[in-house]
Image (cartoon, rainbow, N blue to C red; front, side, top):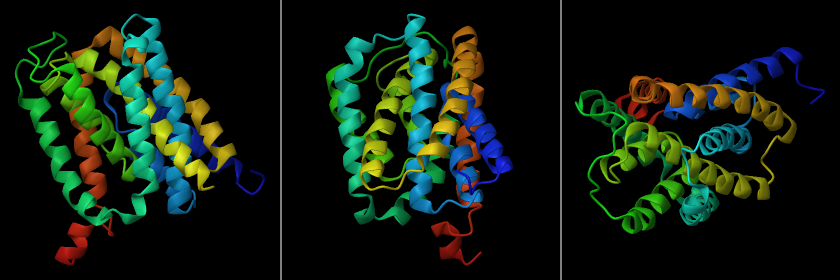
Length: 261
């Protein structure tokens, strides 16, 4: 810690606060935290590990707040959280053998499609709608798939869960947000466990950022409960588009490399 300048620590703490606020409402906190860690000079592997540590505080804070307000039945969701944890840990362990370039190539377009779905669907509100799959099928298919993806790569995990809860499970926007945060906490925990075992976590920086994440998520989740879909829907659309743009402007993105731009 002593070799990191105070202004860098403050910069990372502010970035984490903003990430926690955004992530508790619409997901996409990694859009802020990961670039901030890279700009601070952390190597890629340590950036991902430290991001998982500080992200635990944000998703945990949001899930705790939602549960305390009666929005989340933790006991009922524990089996799916355990499955998400295991899938994310497995994804993190095999990340080096997965074709990451293929994921990075497709992800911006998938995120834009999610943004368009939420922006253009007319009845997107807090009311529950008809289920398209049973809770059991949802838990045994969507949860491990998204959990594994979060361990392997990560960006957009919250957006994918939101889309699945709304379009498949029939949840209203606020209810989808609540359950997304709980499962996202589990996937963060699984990925973090794998990165910690590999020794690529900056504990002190991660804990400082985690404290800021906790505060940001606490404020964001409170606003989400009060405003529901009026706040969550536009912020989710903006977050998906911003994450897609952020990925595409990276000079190392496979699409830019493929096109030679």
